[in-house]
Length: 430
Image (cartoon, rainbow, N blue to C red; front, side, top):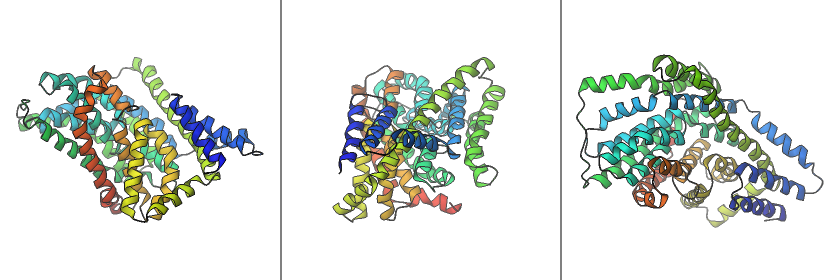
């Protein structure tokens, strides 16, 4: 590693350890590195790369999908999805745990936000599960982990970010590629719940009649329809993924304002401001990461990492284990968006040389980093879940371990069985 590469790494991680905001860490490390190169016009390079980084048509989808997620979270969708899940799986022993997982999967997919799923679903599921003797810590652990599965099921903002950074990767292909892995991860979490609760006195819910199932489905169907509208419209050539995000906003607005009637005109400034704040954070990260990407490429760091990993072994299975372990470690101290922005340009050349499809790599990278959302010290969903459940991280870690094992099994399946990720995209020609 030459001096400039060392400067980049030391400055970035040094600031990160000092709890400096991640976007500032990226920007400062990039500026210091380019300054150390000598005669290169630092201000021009950094400003140009930041500007070009966010001047991307696919990135226009992010503010719209963020806004549609905010509208979905405020529009009463979460409760109706829970009622439908309860009618379907609540009858089984430990059924409320399955209801929690299923609701988080559906709401996380519709809203595109794991954090929104934890806060929206956890607000009423955690107290209800505690009342049914599941235990507060188990309820928080389950909600936290289940919420991340929705990030694999479209529409997903993090997939758009990955597609932009990776280049020449279809957003629609990624959306389709995440469906089966997301379902697999959710089913494995339910399996962990079954093993953890089979000897516990948690009982089962009432058996719902066919009429109750149909009524709850009718109430939840308009919310679930968003996913089909977005994916169906893209596959049918009606609109692009970016245009689909605007359709999602219009649909979510109509649903919350006219159909469910739980959003009022007076709420608009607050909701738009929340969406704008989230979008601005993402865009700043994207812009600064593009500048860092230029510095990485200039110093040939991706090529160096690729050669170093391939020098360890040419065994594809072994290299994938190393990459997964690296991403698991990264996920414990770095949020998902900056991790994707920084490490995609570094690791994608490695897996490409191993013959791995970019869509497959994107899916198992996102699945890997989803686990990081539930782990300290920077587990966003874990912190939100503990806040909603009014408990501590130390108490939640123990019931999280079996769920982590289930998610780890899911990660291995997604990593080593490419068909789970590329089958659907190949069917539709992506």
